Length: 142
Image 1: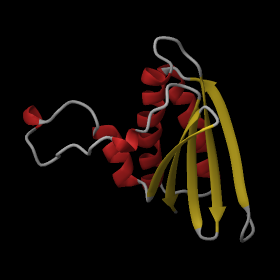
Image 2 (image 1 turned 90 degrees about the horizontal axis):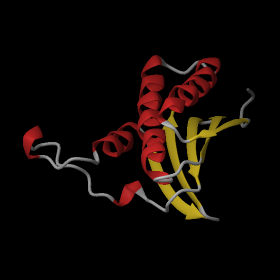
Image 3 (image 1 turned 120 degrees about the vertical axis):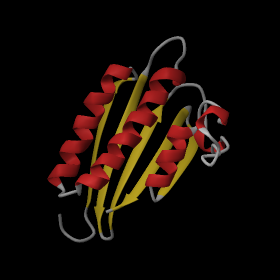
Image 4 (image 1 turned 90 degrees about the vertical axis):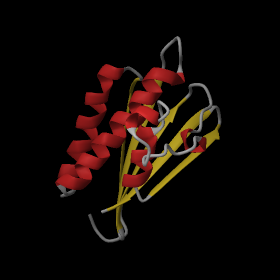
């Protein structure tokens, strides 16, 4: 890629847990083609598992629907943008209070740890609801 170019690819799959592997493989093939480090790839894999998993479990309950994952790589500065789009129930996971990770595990409330980890690993995380769609965008500097 030349300076200033953007590489944008997307995949749409039914929001089911078994499709996490399909999404992860798709994104990893793009990351590998762009020489992404193993550490960043692992962090992205964790984020995909958490975010796509949440869409699969909660977005269309009790039915199912599709989710689109867009992968955009910019080369100046080197940056990855991963966007998750679904037409499920409007839900902003960033509104949840972060779990108190200083408490003993027995004293912590259930839930919230996954999105907390995603926020910690990514450089930016944003959410919007527009045109009947949940749009969660993760940005990671490469």
